Length: 160
Image (cartoon, rainbow, N blue to C red):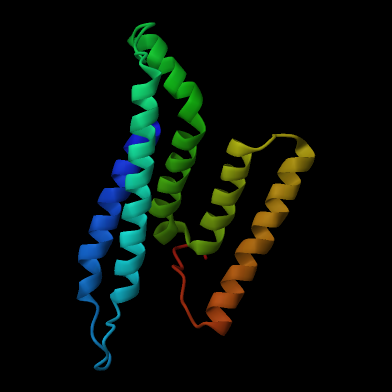
């Protein structure tokens, strides 16, 4: 059931991307405009999401059992058990986006990677140290590469 909802959301996302990609300014007169590639990717995403929805709908019909056999509480408990990691990661991602402009890219990215690693992985002392070191190296490496090689600025925020 969750895959059907995700598929529908991906179809909506691809429609938004497709219709908003025509607003890019034209650099020169060619057959392909700057929005051609995003439109192609949006179409592929929509097709794959539609295939997911159709496949999962067929599987749901074949099962012929109701998800609410044990009542709504049992259904909600089963769904929470299955999707709680996704909810926690999405909450962490939302906080990451909100605090990016306030705290800055470096600190927010390090904290997000550590939080995601702790949510998904084991919480042993050695693993926490490894997750922290990796998040520090990846974040600083990305920052240096994008700032100094590609000249792309990241949000600075109040701290860094």
